[in-house]
Length: 461
Image (cartoon, rainbow, N blue to C red; front, side, top):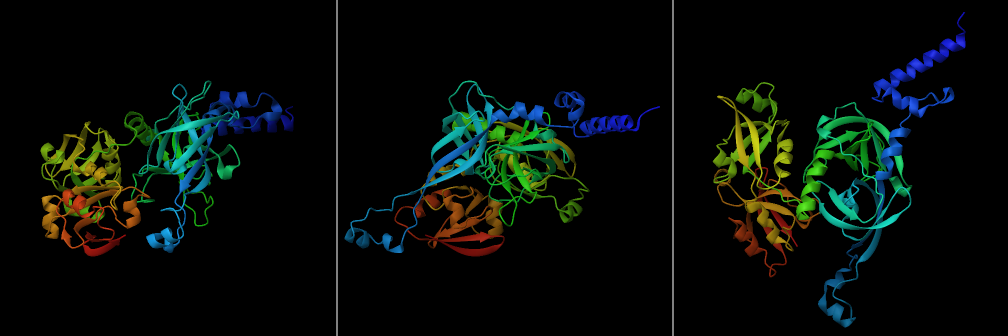
């Protein structure tokens, strides 16, 4: 006769073995985690013991401009009271998280916003070691930064392929929420390819319900086999706390940015010279595309790599180097994060069939916007309007392709897609005009532009 408690005991074992299979844990891991009958429970402890030493806490001392009284802007007032030209900056302390991705080089991935304006950066390892860190490079548009520390016996986290991630996969978030120290939370991948959180950046977020709170920024999003799949970066919350909607930069995007930061200290974005838009249901019906997904080419710049490659208005880009394109934001990310000088293979659907088109990524004039450093346009990626764009507006101008979040251009109110027509009533037909009319003698700029078909006057001081 089989005892009732024995049946129950066997049922419990079967249940947890099945549960381990469902969540993707090897049954051997369950055995390792529960050596005795009293501990026959599923656990992530073996995986976490291996990966948590690679996740670090980051403390930052930064400097921000001090709040200034309007009287401080008066030179006579400053001279009368023997005041310096500007009030001393205020020191600010903040904390975040990071992930060691290369133990030999001491490379640590984190968020740009964690280390922005940092004067001093300190990395604290799980074992308590505190190490000074050097900023290798940072990219606002993707919110990725790379640090370097010097130490022995570092533990790096293996990087996974975020392109293989599926909605419903179990993930673990590791970081330093609210400065409490290393904390682990778990959940699933809620959605992929999220964008529109900040329209001025390059976004392809992983959404997860694993708890992410202030201080988790820069921490690791890890799969159950212990691989880094994302860098935690943001939350969506009306009150500032976790409500189950968190976002992480995919590991593949972070690695692409990291490689450029190592090589150049910055991300050098390329272009092929096209304007794009999503395939909407109305557009799909008009062009006879059916359920095809991708990005429609809305214009092709004269003399651009796209024109030389034979791309045409109305072409639908469905893949880049074999990777499916789901929309215009996806294509923008693929092109914008591909190193300048690289050849990419576009899969293009046209009325007469599907073809492969090879296009070379080049720097072009838009990268000349770096010459506008120190002006109100700093942080904006600019280019001369194409003939087609000028014909649609009835005037030449300069197009704002992208705006770096938090930059002077962003604070001034510039937005991607703006077409600048004039500055202080002087016509703007090229980047040279932008440089000319933003010289030091102009303290206030009246910028005439076209946005979404409407003319606006933007006052920038």
